[in-house]
Length: 528
Ligand code: FAD
Image 1 (cartoon, rainbow, N blue to C red):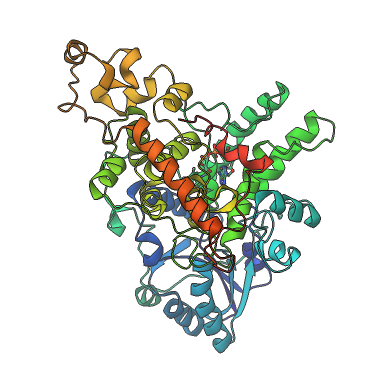
Image 2 (cartoon, rainbow, N blue to C red; image 1 turned 90 degrees about the vertical axis):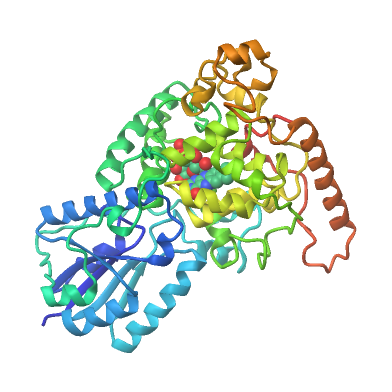
């Protein structure tokens, strides 16, 4: 039995820019590529996300088979699997892409300890972020920079992010084969499983917005780069969040980046290079697409050492706002029956396609929390984590805290709150988006599509949409609840400011929004 190197695919489901994979295939006698179905991680997943994951695994398997190998997909406890691979397949080196989330670190510590005991070398490489969060924290004196502005200052001292690593050379790689006996011990799937093999079935006539896998991600990237190049050429450097097209097919790379089918460093550098080329070596300005990628870094960095980042309790970043509990309103929001057509269209698109535009995420998150229902962002996070294909522990939690004004520079920000009617109308005035996802409103005339409660009864009858019968009445009256909510925010802010400075719930960093706040909230300005 020769010395074998095992590459454990987790999030970085790609062959390009994969430094840990490069290390794995270098100077080993045998190489195995594996993926372990982790029940902790898959518990929360909806069908679309599971489908994206299994498609990504199938694509990796197909690429490895074309090179003479395969991807072994197994289900079980990683430490048990690694013990077997060590004793029965000669694993002497384990390589993996390091995950900076505090949740993964807990799992990985156990694996590291086992490998140390077994004398297995562990090689971990970070390639899921532009900069290593630990280096940013170190450069900031041991703490994550607490505002985006500070974050930009600190990262500017680190220089440009590393370029992607070279593609692997596969010519001399000898792929190991697992015997049938070993396959049984390892809980190996006979083929890459489908969502159904793993017990996931469609619930909402799902029709995923994206296809999983590196090949599809790289093809989508080419379309996205063309779009960006045309925009740069026209002098438009603003991210698509500023002029959103919520009707067209999405060219979002977020799902591909989330599963690592596309390297974020490749995306970043390809955009930089287009801009450099068109603007003779000048880098893109701060408020451009690459700035959006920096927001991603910011949230990762804030989450790095914070295992409670996805909850209020024990989370030093988050203010403990006394949210309401109202299971009926929560259910209406989740299922898209709030009586606010734009909000309902967004939630139904989310459940069906596993994706909604940033402006829609912002609208529904504000509606659930400080805007209308005054329900905790933790409840909204659960729904997003289930249905979004790109659901990411650090990014999703960070954005929910942001929109609900629970953390960061936005703490208890009561100055702006989204109106579900005028905001929706501003983003998509024709009502086509609502007609697509809320078919019971499809025949309502455009003037009422965002506010069906204003339609006279004869119009409702003629449109086959009687309020309270075909479509619900509004669960809350925005004009009233938003005023109340604003007052509650003001009161909490006031009481926290007047509390003892030693109280660690006191948001000492409450201050006016910084210059950079406009980036994710560019459409939040629709005040009531
Ligand atoms: P672009 O504008 O093209 O941005 C390029 C990339 O930058 C994105 O693909 C993404 O990787 C990153 N990015 C963009 N905006 C943000 C942001 N505000 N925060 C962090 N990274 C960003 N994005 C996720 O990838 N996963 C999530 O789970 C997620 N949850 C969210 C929850 C809420 C409540 C909100 C308001 C936003 C959330 N976002 C999340 C951020 C953002 O909405 C998506 O990244 C964006 O819609 C993806 O579309 P795009 O690729 O066209 O974005």
